[in-house]
Length: 61
Image (tube, rainbow, N blue to C red):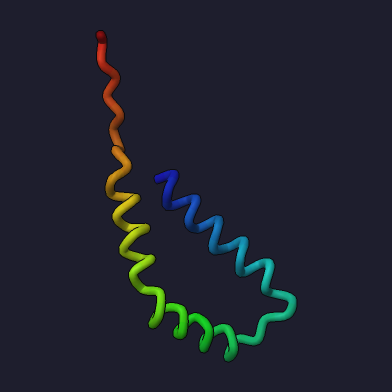
């Protein structure tokens, strides 16, 4: 849950920083370029999220 909120806040922050001078056609072309060339980063991020244990059990010893 915290990871999802962090991702949403990070993306929202980037969009708000670019909003005053954003050209949506240029943004779309850059996004598609990045998606095409850097898609393995998505796999890395998903793997890191899945490796993070959701229920941390504390040992009594």
